[in-house]
Every structure is written in C-alpha cells, then in structure tokens.
Image (cartoon, rainbow, N blue to C red; front, side):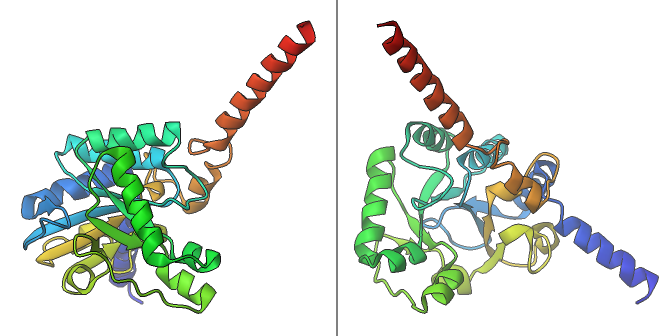
Length: 258
C-alpha cells in the first residue's frame, strides 16, 4: 500500500469516526445547499428525509432537535416504547418529547419485533396501540414506523414479521423509502458507505438515519458514550434513585418524630 493510498484511507476513516456536533452541523449546512428536507408524507424528489431512531436517550435526541432547529431543519424522531433506557410517557420523558415537537419536529414509532416475538403478542394490535398512544399522549399525528434491529430480532427468534399496515401509515423500510430511495445510516458509529459528508450530491433522494446517542460535543467513542449511562450525562436512573432515597429518608424521619 503506497503513501497516497494510506493518507486517503486515514482521511476517510478520520471522517467516519468524527461524531461531533460540529461535524453534524457542517454536514446539515452542506446538505441544505443541494437538498430540501422533507417528511415521509411529503417526500418527492431532490429531497432528504432525516430520521432519528431514539434507542436509548431522549436527552441526546433533544440535543439533535435543537441543532436542527437552529438550521431551520425538521426531522422525525422514532420513539421506542420498549427501550431499557427511557420511558416516553413518564413525566420527564413526556416533557422532553413535547419539547422536541415544539421545535417543529415529528414523531414516528420505533417498534420492537423481538419484544413482539418474546411476548407472543399480536403484532398489528401492538403497533396500532403504540401509535394511538403516541398520538393521544402527545397530540400529534404519526406518519411512519420503523422496526428496531429487525435483523437481530429475526436471528434471535428465528421468525419474520409480516404486518399489513393501515394505508395512512408508512413503513420506513418499505421499497419506496428503502429501495427506491438511497438509505444511509450511522448505525453503531459506522457509516457503511463512508460518512454522510462523503455522499453529498451523489443521490437524488435520500433517507438518512442518525442515532442521536452516538454524537457528542467532543466526539466520544462508543465505549465512552455507553459509560455515560452509568452515573454520567445519560444516566436517568441515578437521579431517580437519589430522589426516591431522599423521599424515603424524609418519610422515615417524619415517622420517627411522630
């Protein structure tokens, strides 16, 4: 391998490993020069559907929502009811999601096929119930849904899920949006076809999936980000536990005085 090839590879890998908010902002600014940002329902041509799967952190999602608002960009945040890391209809979770909506963004449903298989529940009923809950609780309209880690769910369960969705609901992985439209994702901090910034102006229509949890101010690694869920920035459990302990102590003190 010659020096030119090595330098080219380093440049490519360096970009692929750059998951800073600054880099994300620069990418969006460049995209705006050539594309119009749209939603699943309004998609036509020479446009980009920007989507976020909120797998683990509503706080990270809100940061993305604010960055995009500053650039006058609207995207769709897909909410996962079965997440092990957040509760979308808790008081705090609801507050964050409502703030995301107030910034001009949309909600989608990120349904979990493995959850459906493991609990042996009706897929269409489950998906419909979750859609209705999002619409009712947040007074919004759900346009699209997207499966969570479909390949992993199928490999673990040995099953495939086939659901006939209502005509009003779009599957983000349908042929129209996943086959006929170029799909790019940052899954696991890895761009399989090079960073999004390396794919500018290559395609007429794009669906781009960004996972908010993988981006940070300083470009943290995957391990560093996962560590932040244990006593760090994205730890939603420690504050709740601390609050519960304080309430218990106050209650115990009151009883002892009585």
